[in-house]
Length: 417
Image (tube, rainbow, N blue to C red; front, side):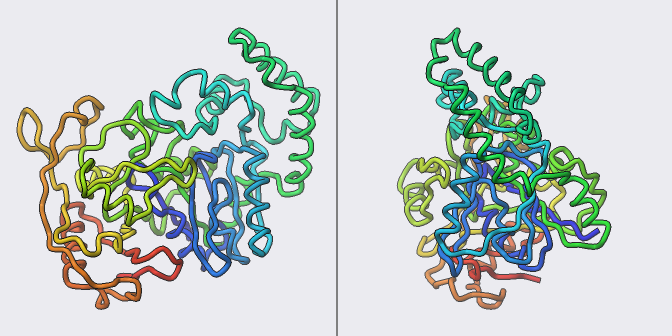
């Protein structure tokens, strides 16, 4: 079964889009299985820079089908705008498949997110993903297939407006306007809608090459992340079955993607955050501003305690260490190899958020480098200091590094053995 997964190993923004696009050159399908337009996968290629929130990045390759499985929260307005932006770049029309079981993000979901305060308290992307998943669990959501029944859509929206009425917000939504817009958006995707689960399962049975493209990162997983400062879906490799309905019994590869440093958007614990000059340097050189929100990301050093935890949760067979070029010019590079707590040194990633907020990172310092990495394509092209850093990472987490990102362009990747 030629199935592979690309999973974020940190708090998202690890350059999963770049890595997936690189690997998808030889794939038949790339499948999104979780999240929604809170994802921001960026690809820089011959057509320009594509910033994707819904469309699987592999679909930018003419020979690769992009599929959205039922675990994704779909915003049809965002999808429309995304396709329009790709056409404006002169790209070939992507071949897409949409599960008819996709739950829809609707205008009331964004209002509820703001009203509930989670956007401020937790630092969400304000895209309505959490309320959409809430309605799904409460069995009152609208699915893509439901748009075929206009009266059912109208009734669902009327109920949502009534509930908002208690908060004085009912006049901000026009049921008839939304019904009309949804009907038009539905017509644009209807021919590409169907049983994605069956199509992908059949593809795997026939030996097709399928990449499952994760959104967000392991430390934002609803169950395994730094709860409650997490997203509303399963972001680990275990989310593949949850979000696609396919029992993938064996992956040929589960690739964990991590930056050569660490970033985080929004609130929550971040043991290796550098709020001084080091963090500012990483932010400016790495252009660490959210693809989805534009917010500046919090920046700090690579946390190997957290990375080892992600490796064990997902069973990574390899790592892609991205944005190595951002560290160029530093006199030293720091790696967090353990935490100091009130009870002493530990290499265990805590479950309690409060405990994680109180740990102190224990660093190992490695020499920096000045060489330009952008032309490196093989391991021998990398400076000795970079190779020493890779060896240190592998030694601490017990997983080999397979890919190294050395620049933003699609070809700026070093493939290791």
